[in-house]
Image (cartoon, rainbow, N blue to C red; front, side, top):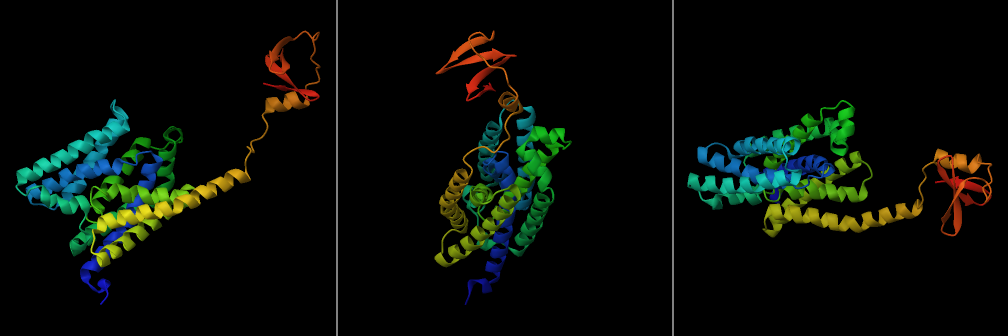
Length: 329
């Protein structure tokens, strides 16, 4: 009998595919902003949210969403208005979130072992309610990531240009951080809080090896995320190993397979266009085409020895001999 005939495997596969779509969608923008480790930082903050859920007897997923979102906004505030850089802001929440989670779990009297399912994932125990929560959050993340792609890419690629173009850079930066926080909680039961950043970043890095252009990278990363999540779940089920770790290792394996091909493609592109195709500077053309003056020892212009030839200062420029004419420097 196939494993997919069981309800728990159907729920697990649906949750894995949704996570595989949502995580790389947000991760693409984090890579563009050079914040590849933000998922790790938010994941550690979410540990505190899980612990608060255990302490108060409420849903750990919902409390993790709230705390992770607040942590993501705080990261942006520190980066934008504080004196700490992005990596320092992540480090502060990285350690504080994990320490707070362990402490509150102890206060709740449950012990740190109960956090294992959230730290490393427990996809085969996903309930129908968890699937619905994951589906709603993942659809929101995917929809916003695709619909707002031009604006989010502009802000991530060049914030100054986006600001001049009239985009609300601060708002979109916070939005990406909030989407990352929601994605972390979506992936919490799939790959775990400690491994979620890998599913957000590795498919993007793999897609970049082959894709040329942002849109192709984004869609390719989402497809690779689905492949890694779905195949990782099935392999872990048949091999009886941890699903989260298997998903991440398959994603890393895909990157290892595509990296040589990407390197070969880049090398072929360099060989096909070894020289710049930019137009010749206007001042060089003028010196090349319109300079009729013949320099010499008695021309009245200052002579400057330059290697094996002599340059002459003329009209504020240095003229260097080039065949039967002079070029300007």
